[in-house]
Length: 64
Image 1: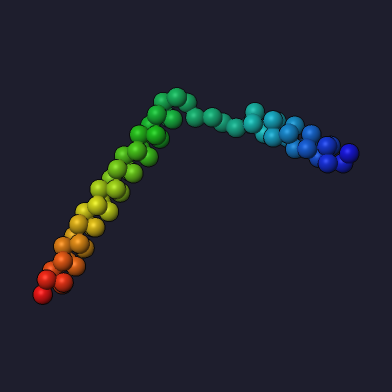
Image 2: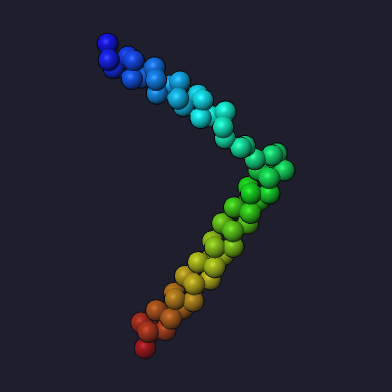
């Protein structure tokens, strides 16, 4: 029976903590999402360019 009490206390504590959270506004969520998408695309482009440059370098080394 001790496990049931522990689970109940955990769930009640979690529920109470959820009410203390300061949730972002809709506009903040949109801004953060756009930031993450933009940074992801920028990093993908950066690594694609690096891959292309290194690939050209390796091809030059092999062609010699």
